[in-house]
Amino acid sequence: MALPLPLGLTHSEVAFLAEMELVTVVPRQRLESIDLLSGKTPPLRPPHRTDLPLWLALLLKKQRRANIVPPPWLHPASLAEIVHRETKVHPSSFSEPMPTSSRARQSQPGYAGRIGGNNNSDNGNGEVILSPPFQSNCTSSAPAGYLPYHWLEVAEALITHAGDDLGGNTSEIRGLLRDLVEVRAAKMRDSAETLGAEGTGGVVSLRGVGAMELAENRGFVLGVVDGVRKIGGAVETARREREEEMDLGGGGYGDGDSDDDMGI
Amino acid sequence: MSYYDIDSILTDAEKIPCTFQLDIPDLGYLDNTPNQPLKAGTKVNLPLWLAEMLVIANTGGPDNKTFVTFDLPRALGNDVVQALKADPRAVPLRDQSAHFYGLATHMMDLSEEQELGSVLRKTFVTRAAEISLHARKVGGGGSKGKGKDEGSNLGIGGAGEDFLRGLDEWERKLFRKAHDGAKSGKEWMESIKKN
Image 1 (spheres, chains in turn blue, cyan):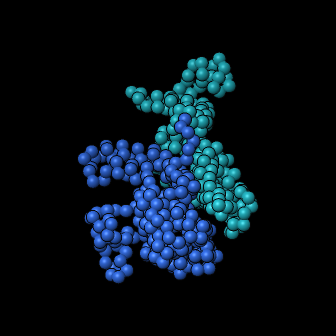
Image 2 (image 1 turned 180 degrees about the horizontal axis):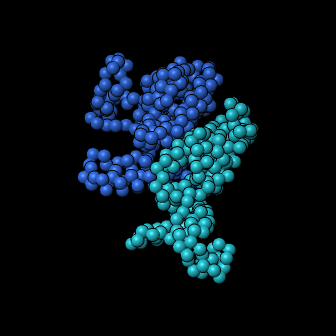
Image 3 (image 1 turned 90 degrees about the vertical axis):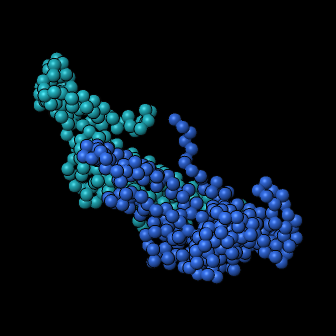
């Protein structure tokens, strides 16, 4: 038997990864650039805002050397809007993930540019697709009204360690976050039920689910999918045999496809 | 299924009712009548592993005469299926068989039961959603009596306990997974506040 390690990342591992997210700080002291394995940090000059990794920002915050500018999506109004969208507008799907930075051009609403096409000057070299830790989702320039991949981890860390930078309404933010967690957990439960509906192909869209939610629900969702696969196995084999007997050159409706779908 | 999977082994030990169609010498001890041949038409409860072998073995006969036929076990009988159709949540599957789904999938391999498959699928996912709900609730109230048990009127005690007692082995595993996820989530939340 294999080691009984759980699949995927644990909560603390996810929280550790979330500390790579960039957040915006307002330094109170000068700090020269630090040469880290991941590259040099930008030098800090007191009145100027700078993007730093979350772990460094929290360290400086604890030493009272910097203040953290909360990302716009953590504002109570934005959170309330997301809660409203999750409960009233789209009660059955998770809210959209944060758009990539080239698509979120507030100056030109409705304008969709190429990903990485007209980005920051440092990565404007064509098709660069950035995944969550390297996308500036938690800086002050991130769009409001969307949840980034590491929303829960970053929000909890900021509330706990930089509560005074959030405008004094941490309890309100905390309450809204609780609502979001509960609403989305309920959706995760219901997603299990849609797996059983005949005809939908047994696929659940998990688009927009955060890293921490994935860590929490991975075992359960995989268990459900596995169970449905086992139950459907006998029926599926029978159906496939019948189809093969009826028509060998059926094409189009590939059996392999439906098999892949079941084994997410 | 793994060779060492204890649940798979236990599932194989579930009894299913079989009927012998031929007289078979020296098998009388299966029916508590040693030293006599087993009469045709005798109903015997055979473990799944044996019944499976016998059923597979007798498909290739030239005269198509089978020497053993089997019925669905009581756990998958019409009563249970009708009850599952009515409300999957209300049936304590464990009372039917501790390895209900394992048994059911085995039986579906052996016999072509179209309807059973869709009923089971519906049952499994409906109950899975319920299991997840309970798993979160228990995690809230059970760990350290933390204050976060809003809506616990649905959870622990009363109907919840009855439901959780009726889970079969597959569902128990699922409950454990969902519970572990919710529990480590809570632990992480608390650990953040500490440092």
